[in-house]
Image (tube, rainbow, N blue to C red; front, side, top):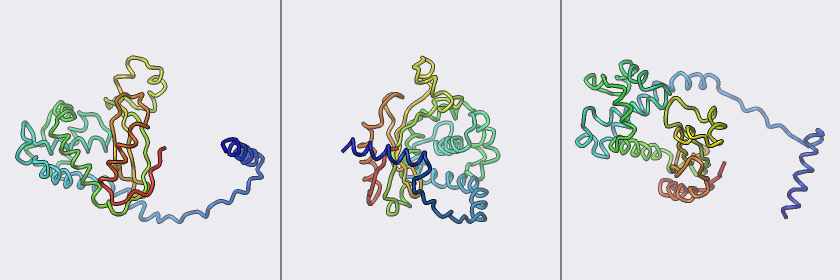
Length: 234
């Protein structure tokens, strides 16, 4: 069977190279450019307002209103983390932008003067992580009965905003000491229709294979979604 498939593949490959393969191009998909332009223009303000609403709801659900006070409400820190990840700026610039985005994110004026170190420490705050985890579950609710097909793939994320996985990949896989500390691997599932992340697992090491994490991710998806038709690994 394997040899037959290999022979067929070689035949198709030769026909493609020679130009004799019977390729039939698909009809171009019409695009509503007006709607595309509007979506691009409205994305940032609508997403920021969504972050404000969803984090507030998640904070109430995990008890953030009464349990998550320290120097600043944990919901404020969760909003800043999500906004920073969307915008991709460093801690100092993200804090500076807070004065412009405060009203959109529904943050009280008294909570708008944070140190960049406060944002930095929020990434390891258990209460903030609990709110963000609840935000993840809330994002699944609108599509639980709609999404049925999922794709899984793994990638590495930087532990510092100064690093980028694609630019550092070659150096990283040479196993230089500095590379091992800069990245953490996550394996994630995404709905193929609405493109919402539907499950994830943090790998034990940046070098880990995706395979051991496929079953736990599938269990997550089955708990969240009404039906799983297919699961593809990229």
